[in-house]
View 1: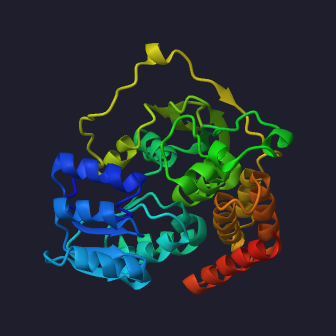
View 2: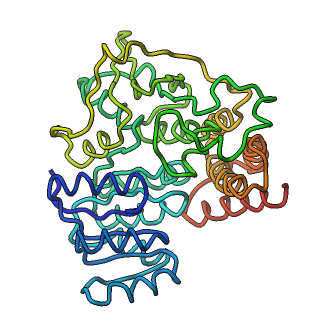
Length: 381
């Protein structure tokens, strides 16, 4: 079991739940980072007494320095500060729970520094999987998935012998707040409607991604990299109750699934304590009280983000980068009330179609494709 943590994105949903676990098991938290929520970050800093804190936005970093001037904590900012945080020498593991493309470079720096990774940042593998996985192999570090679905798959594979052959990965989706909606119905939805997830409590961007099913599209790309399978071996199924978190079908027809409550403490704790399992303080699932689990095929035509991501990973190269970048830009515009809900999927598809497959040889290639996709979105609204 690890003893010390670097936590990237400490004020978000995954970050605060990671600190719940650190608090319970008395893990040393060496590093904290946040974007701009310095009120909560100050409380966390005074409780956990990290050696280094990164506040990504420089103006907030300057204010934070004044607030913690009575402590010995070192305060840094920007992408350079985030990379310094990720490579902090004394930590055993880096929990990456930042949101968006910004998570890629710190992940690569952490791997370079020989750190194990607990990954909750989808974009790291969606955009940079072709760089990250070879780097992990070269440095001999571990990558533990934190997303509930990928953690579930990881746990299912851990329960099978090394000789097992994967027939299918079954990636579950809640269906979000708009399950069963037609395109006509989706023309009327608001930002407030899209932020009402039926089962999970998540950040705003991820909640919108769940509503568009972009979140599941990104997870298909991530799963292809994590488990070294083609997109043809990944099935998406809607599991409305969010009790079955994902499953693996093996060549002999057996399906092993991970079932539990919709509680992110479980996959976070497993990533931090693997291969051990420690007692949970959360609610336990009663199958009798749950009563039933229902399963449905996704609506690929209505929810274009999902089908766009699947097409993108099948083509490979820079296509997934474009899909992710376009989505980040489109979601931000939707949250600002500048585009409609359906325009998110339309813009993501158009920007991805406009991107040539290309080849990823460096972070620069990824940055260029990401920037081009965002500019495409801004110029086509």
